[in-house]
Image 1 (cartoon, one colour):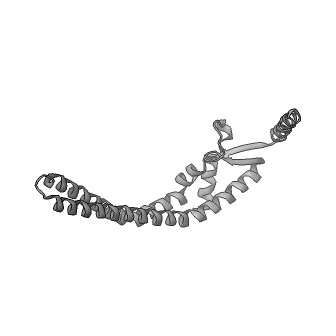
Image 2 (cartoon, one colour; image 1 turned 120 degrees about the vertical axis):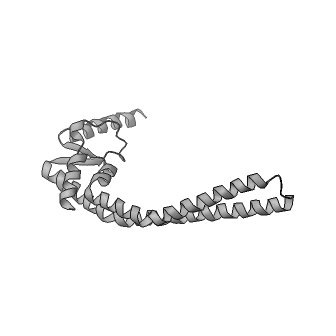
Image 3 (tube, rainbow, N blue to C red; image 1 turned 60 degrees about the vertical axis):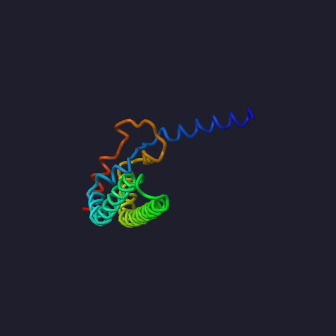
Length: 169
């Protein structure tokens, strides 16, 4: 047990000394995608495609709300059988609404993946080129790496956004 601990500590020192000689940078990938021109265009395209779906969902929700309100108002006046029938209809419409929402969600995710794939591929290429040109040992994703602090000079997000805008006008 003691040997393993000593070996792990030695490996940590060796690894840290190897990285001490190189430059490491960090990029906030979601911020780059959201702020670069290609990402903004893709987001606007998505919003345009799914505006009709959102309007349908909003109309269906409004219909459900009014149906629920009506059911609550009539609850005292309806017979038990009529009340159960209306509740069953309401529950069916709620399920239909949920199914429609899930279907739209799946379509939205597929469209988002289709639009973001070329942007992500280009982003990887831009980050690699930037790293080679500026002598970085590693450039890590700030969000996905579990990093809790990055010195401002090591954050390359704005520089990568500028590079992306050049690469994908």
